Image (cartoon, rainbow, N blue to C red; front, side, top):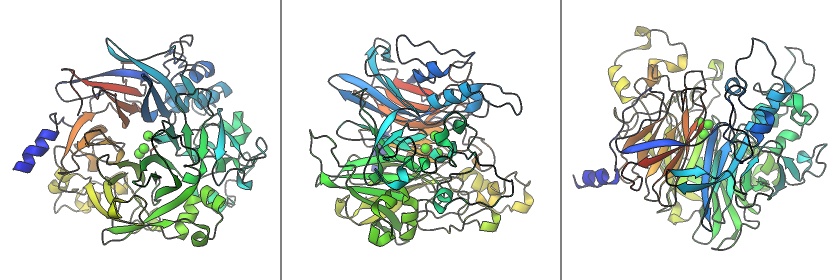
Length: 595
Ligand code: FEO
Ligand code: CA
Ligand code: CA
Ligand code: CA
């Protein structure tokens, strides 16, 4: 009973129910409003967003980008600056209705390029709360065209040389930045995720032509056609037949100084090249910098970087993110695991090749296939880490049925994993540089209500689901801390607050049907990592995911990212018109501290 009282005391809010309402739903005593939305100008002389045209290349280049994801709020000398990833764009929303088969104009394609990248802007607190300071000299956009330096082991390597950059030292732009990180020296880390979907080939190919792509192109999903963006049409560097090395220049962690609008961002290749989710940086007791990172793809891996040098308060980053060792996680079923160094000896690859073809190097040392590692979060009060393994419909599915031979393993225990899980581990002896760790699952998401209702029911007795992955046999109840009152699927963003509460933001199936019945829209929950209790705090509008959470320095405002509302055409968030992604500010009506 004493434990129950303590856990009740740690949650200062009543759980909200799952809902499919097209708004932000919060517990009583909390309210929300928008800080910034896709298309909002970031400069005093930039035009207001025009919902008719949905902006132009020029307006978008000076306005908040689309589909915000990871973000960090920095404070220095009394000024507060946000750096926010604009991961990608929903082309139907950005471009508006297109006739069947109608090709986008060059202008539309260029506008989509300007909607990607990063938005950096100052905020100030007025009588009505925080607002964007449009006339700040710190406001800037980073887009596909921003010059950035390449640093670390891959810099200058043959595989990075292109006709525009024969030295392999300078890259243009960043896109598909998903999660993020921050450093104690005050810089932002933007993590390049699905960078591959923007490349295509202009080579004439018969429909049944043999796939002649390299092992690396196949492993990273670089293909003959893109995901509909058409960037190669306006910029030949996205044409892999013209510039086969260009894709090797994306898939990195990009470091940016939010307080210097002139500073060139830097691609830190020592942190490896894969579909980076976030980069959770901790300073080990001995001062070394340790970065934990997930590769968000079914069957890919969890990584760790350890710097050679050490950091102390007051220093800048120097070469701490360029000189160090990358490791990949190998788990065993006995609840322990180890970090295996990706060295030339262990992989048979050179240091630059390991930095560029990291996935291939990690496979060579027997890394454990994971259920799509999303954000990693470090407990601020002790050496303990959490990673969201969002879902994996292919786990346990044979190749002839569309799977890829990933058997279940310790931290990924379920076949056709529709729901995901949150894994936690503690480094041996509290040392983030130790080779060994112990792991446990913090939560296995699931649908305990449906699982109980379906007990004893077979697939044959049910209507055939549209997708075989959604069959009855794939309805799992989840762990004990997953209940009728807090069901969710596909944990994605994880973030601790200063009190040690773990916030869980979801990016899952919002159909509210089948295996997901009763879960409603995507949501944010608070997890008490001491007791295991999880309580739902917020539900997002329709068809969004919630991602990115930051607190104001006084703890009274919580900033949460609402990404891709209405991605299937069924939301008018936030103001009844065109759906627009953005950052929501949540406060208590009594003006108290959030939590
Ligand atoms: Fe951009 Fe891993 O989600
Ligand atoms: Ca996302
Ligand atoms: Ca994500
Ligand atoms: Ca996700």
